[in-house]
Length: 112
Image (tube, rainbow, N blue to C red; front, side):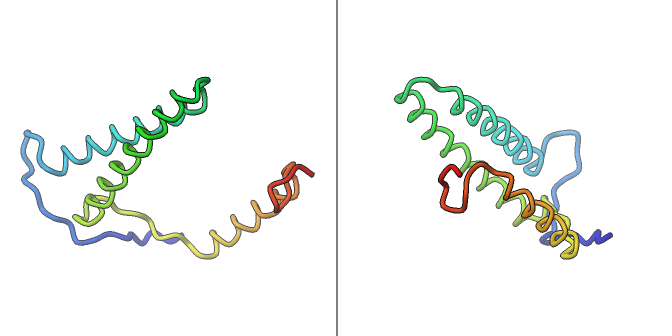
């Protein structure tokens, strides 16, 4: 199993009982992730077009903010990713590719 991390050099912050920059940004990122998930649910359940449009605009702003916070944390080395094992990726791709023939929609997006 490949356990190699993809990460930038970590920007050091003071390790004190008080929140530091990393703590604040991590908290904001967690909040933005929660908010985008909540707005996504609200979009799915919006029955009024104007409300849907307004929620979509707010969702997009929130999603963009989440992405900027993620990028900042990654740049500072405060967010690491596991490198994907190419063989495992290929196996997963083939497995899910086999499911596509079970979808009610064809490649052109039309009902079969």
